[in-house]
Amino acid sequence: MEIFSIILSITGLVLLGFAYKIYFKKSYHLINGFEKDYKKGLKDENYAIRLSKVYVILGFLLFFLGLALYFHAS
Image (tube, rainbow, N blue to C red; front, side):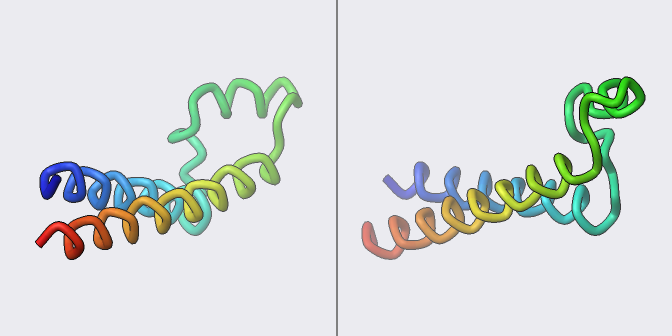
């Protein structure tokens, strides 16, 4: 169970890192096909911002769930 909680926490941190890079650093190349769709006019920057907010929510959820499982198991 400890390994599972560590994996959850690391996954949460990775998602938070992606959200930081997309939202603050404007690294839109991290989103699959975004630059191509942006040039075609199918997606705009609001899509990237919304996606980064979803990453923040999921990242915090997974990180704190992993921490809770780790401390609950020990």
